[in-house]
Length: 569
Image (tube, rainbow, N blue to C red; front, side, top):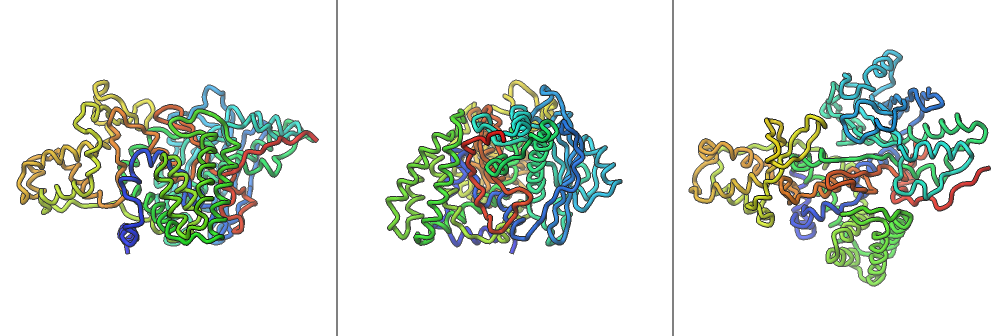
C-alpha cells in the first residue's frame, strides 16, 4: 500500500479521535509546536542506538587555534560513513547566519565509505567552496557553520584554567558551533535521495542530514577541549559529566522554510499525521499508574529544563519562566484526574481550552507515552509527491472540492487589499526566498508562487457562474491562468496538507509555520530575532559518540542547565 493511502487508512480508522485540520493547521497551533519522540533528531538517535551503530574520531589534525581537519567514522554494522571537516578561523565581522557567506570556520561533508588520501585531497579543495564546489555521489551531505562568537573562546578559557563554565555565562543559548546549512539530495553532484538502495540506513527523509548534524556537534566539543589543552597545558581539563552533553548545535532559520511548507502538501500531511495519530492513540489509552508515572516524569523533566532557562524575550512565543508557570498548571490538573481511567483524554480536552502554547506542550508530553514502531514511522515518511488533474473533471466537481478542502479560506478575508500584499521572490543578494511588498518590486520571473490561498479563492469566484457540466479542459482553455489553482486543488487531497494561512497577506507571521517545521526536525530553544527568522538549538543534551546505548532511550531530552560551575583543581 502506498504511503499516502496508508496514512488515509490510518486517519480514517481514527476519524473521530484525531484532531481536525481546522485545529491542527491553524497558524497559532503550528506556531506552538514542540519536539516530540517522533522528531527527526530523536528518531535518528534511537535508530543508531537500537542498531548498535558505533562512531569514533579517526583523524584530528588541528592546531592550537582550532584550525585543521578532522574525520569521524560511523559504522552501522553493514556500512561505514565518514564526516570530514575542515576548520579555520575568520574575523568576527565575517560571521553570518545567511547562506550567502563566502567563508566559514567549519566546512564539512558526510560521505559513504572511508576516504582515501586522494579523496581527502579532493574534499580539501571542494568542501570549503560549498555551493561552488562539485562532488560525486559518495558525498551525501554538505554543511558549514561558525563558532559561537560569545561562547567558544569563553569555554576554551574556562577549561584551560581548570574550571567548568559559569552557568550564567552560557544561559541564553546551548551551543558551541552554529550551522548554517545542510545540503543534500543531489545538490552539486551529491547523491540524490532516490540513489539510496533499498534497506540503506540513511534511506529515510532527513536521516543523513541529522547524522551529519550530530557529528558536527561532536566536533564542537572536541575543538573546545583541544584548544583548551593547547592554551592551558597541564592545568586544562575537559567538560565534566554535567556539561559534556549539555551543549547542542546552534542553527538559525529564516524565510527559506516558508515556501517549502506551502509547496509540499504531502510532506506537511505526513509530518502532522504522525503527530496526530500518536496523540489519538495516547488519548485512547487507559491511564494506568505506570503510564501516569511516565507522564509525571516527562512533566517534571520539562519543568526542570525550563526552570533553568532564561527570561529572554521570545515573543511571540513564551519564554522559559512563562513555560514554568504553564507546567505547574499542567501538573496541578494532572493531580485532579489520577483516578480517571480516561485521564489522558481528559488532560488533552482541558488543555485545548487553554492558549496554544499550553495545548501543544501537553500534546508533546502526551506523545512521549506513545510506544509506536519507529520502522513504521519511517515508512510513513516515504512517499512520492505527484498528482494529476483529470481533464474530464467538471466545474461542479471542482466547486465541491473547494468546499470540502478549502472552506477555511472564508476566514482569511482574501478580498481585502492586504491579502495580496507581498510577493515572494528569490533575492539576488541573499540567493534565497524573501518577501517584498508588491508595489516595491517587479519580480521579473523570480517570484516564488506560494499564493495558493489567493489563487483558489479567485478560482472559486471564476467558477461561480459557470455550468456544472463544463469540463476542466474546456475551462482552462478559456481561462488558462487558473491552471495552478486547479492543479493545487487536485494535489490537496490529504487531511493536513494545507497550512490555513495566506503567506502573501500583510499580517502573515512566518515564525508560525517555521516553528512547526523546526519542531519536526527536533529543534528547540526558539529565539525569534524578527518576524521572519529565529535561532534554535539541536541535539541539546543528546548522547555523544561514546554514549549510544539502547537503554538510554529518550532520557536526554529536556536537559537541565548545570547549576554550579566546577572549580579549579
